[in-house]
Image 1: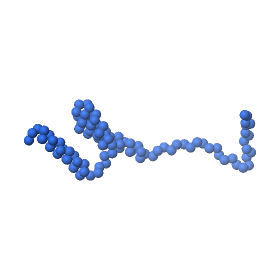
Image 2: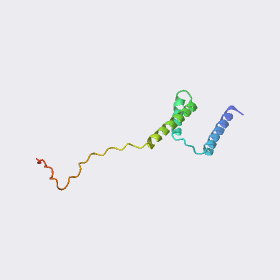
Image 3: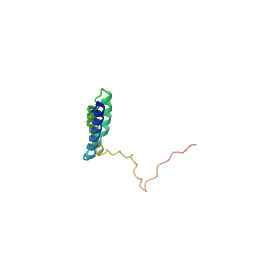
Image 4: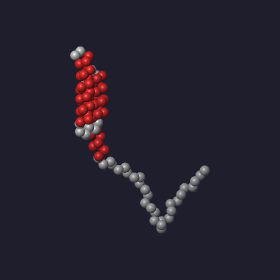
Length: 103
């Protein structure tokens, strides 16, 4: 086999293996991992052809950030204070004097 044919077969086998892994893998709790891996792979590639290392690190960081965000959303939110309302006046109390309106 020539070098070119060997590279083509290697690429096809790698792609087929990746597809089989994605199809056969059980659903996992990978919140944030995919996005982090994509960003990490690009950053690793740009930083010196370390896309796989960048993807792994990005997955870890993305998963950590997603877990942290989920924990913050599960905490009870502090209630905002309602503006103080004046207590209702009793019917026997005289009404408060109003200031005259000038135009």
